[in-house]
Image (cartoon, rainbow, N blue to C red; front, side, top):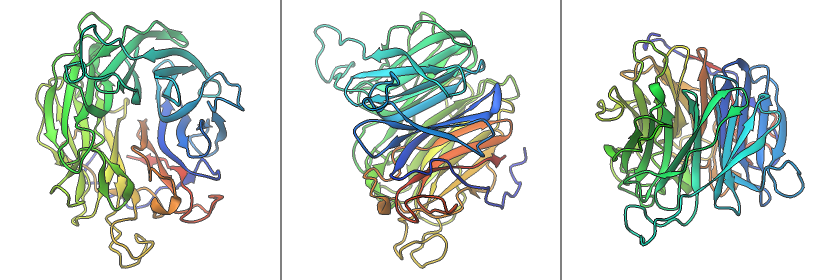
Length: 447
C-alpha cells in the first residue's frame, strides 16, 4: 500500500436497516471463512428492549433484517437486549455476539455457527464478587452496574471486557473449532481501572490480551488513556499494572455541537497485528484528542507499540483537514490478510454554516459526514476519504443519544466495511425521510 494514493470517489452507500425509527451504536463483522457474509447489530430507540440485526451473504448488497432480544414478543431466548452491541467472527467462522441486558447485571455471550442467522446464549458473565472487607474507593472500586462491553476473538480464544460499575472486568474462553467453545475463566478485575471506562480489548500474538480505557468518565476536560496487558491470555498470569499512553482533553461527556445531547468520549480503540508479516506484534491505538480544552477542535490520532504496550510511538494525526471543526467517534480495524489498518470517524469539516453539501441548517460544526483513511504501518495515512454520500444532523433525529457512543468497522481482504448512523437519506430509501430518524448505513471501501 502507498500512503500517497489519492482516494477521491465516494463509495456506494447502502441503507441496510431501512426501518422507521432510530438505530445507532452499530457493530459490524466480516466472516473470514466467507467474506461475503457480513453481520451488523445495532441499538433501536423504540420500546423497552430489542436490537436490530442485519445479515448479508453477498458482500452487503442485500440484507435479511429482524429485531432480536426484545424480551417480550419475540421468543428467541436472547433476553431483554438493551444496547451496546459488539460482534466478532473468529477464523473458524464462529460469530460471537454481546450486548447489555435491560434488567440483569450480567453480560451475555451469544454464538452463531451459521453466519448470524441463528443465535443462542452460551454464557452470562457476572461481575466478579467484591472481595470481603473492601470499600468504595479502593483498587477494586464499587461494583454498581455493567456497561459498554466489547467482545473480540483471536489465537484460539474469545474475550469480553466491560466496565463493572467502577473497574474494568475481563474474561475469556478457549475456542478450538466451529461451535467448539470452552468455559470462560473467572472474570478478573483489571488493576488500576477504577473509573476507567469507554474501553476496548485486543488479542495479540501468542494469546496476549490488552485492555485500553479512559480514566474519568465525566467532564469537559481531563481524560487519560491507560492500557493493561495480560501476557498469557487464558494462562495463569493476570493483567499487569496500567501503563499511561496519552492525555486527550476529552474526559467523556465532552459536549460538541454535533453531539450536543449525548456528547463524546475519546473512544480509544485497539488493533493488534497477528499476521506474521513485517509488523507482526505491533498494536495500534486510535483515540480522539481535543486540541485545546473546550475548543470543540477534536481530531483523530493513532499511536502504536512494538513492545506489547510498554512504550508508544509519537501520535500521528489521521484526519487531514486544516480547519478547527470536530472529528469524533473513531474506529480502527486491521486487515488480517495484509496487516494494513483502516480508521473511520464522523467529520464536521465541511460544515462551515454557509450552506453547501456539508451544511444542513446554516449552523457551523453541528452536521457530520463519515470519513476514513488507511495506513500500512501507522506512521502515515492516505488522504482522508469521504465515505458517506450525504450529510447528517443527529439533533434532527430526536434520538436522544445523537449518533451514540461508537461506530462500526470491519476490514478484510483489502476491503473495509464501516457502519454508521445516517439521516441524510442519500440513498432515498429511509422510510422516515431526509434529516429525520437515523438509519444504519454501510459501504465497501477498497484500501
